[in-house]
Image (cartoon, rainbow, N blue to C red; front, side):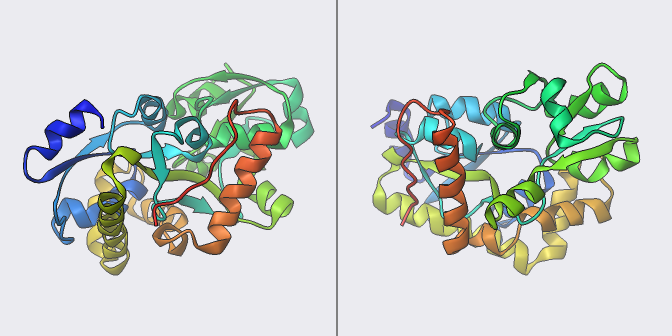
Amino acid sequence: MYGPLRALLACGSLQIRLGHSPDPDDAFMFWGLASGEVDPRQFEFEHVLRDIQTLNSWALDGKLEVTAISLAAYPLVQERYVLLPHGASMGSGYGPIVVSTRELATADLRDIEILVPGELTTAFLVLRLCLGNFRYRAVPFDQISEEVRSGRADAGLLIHEGQLTYESEGLKKVVDLGEWWLLETGLPLPLGANVARRDLGVDTLFELSEVLRDSIQAGLDNREEAMEHALQYGRGLDAELADRFVGMYVNELTCDYGDEGRQAVRELLSRAEELGTYEQPVRVEFVG
């Protein structure tokens, strides 16, 4: 058992550090807990807000009890963490978008440098599956649009709200990776996942999973109140765009992957294995 966990258990209630991005979709999912709408049961939650690349890096060291991560990073932390059966960011026919200031074909991307939001992101992995080898440079996700607009980069891979705002910024879509994946596999594209540390124990993991699922359902059942909370994390998105963004990534697949969602996870990580992405065999395992 991890040393910090012993201390948490000794305090009576079990304190859970819950890592997620400061984005409207994650805020929407955890409104139920933040507002007190959902009974936390034996748990006391501390919300830890960081960008997804930081959360991916922290997960390598098992820093948080529960955290959002890029699905592409899961095989790297599978010995410490197990997938929760809810909380997925999954789009059917839409996803991260490669943009440029000029008209380009997908094949052209193999000959230019592309800005990416981090090597551990699922967006980067799916672009590798789409293109094969390509030149890239990693920069913070919220700087990519400006770098492309200014001409300091030929193309950029947009995640989060950039998928909705690029046209208003004068950028042109080259390829939508969610569209590409759907045509390639017939499946939705799983991008983000929520995971919990295995050392919490089977019974605790099961109860924790129920509480977190209840929070997602509470947001969907009380959409207006949850959206008001989520707008605090909209990074300049107006209410209409924020609502659209939340609708893209908080849906029935977020409450439960279901058979289709689990198949999509296995397909994506299987293809990543074939690409030689991971040193160890991938073990896809969900709580419960």
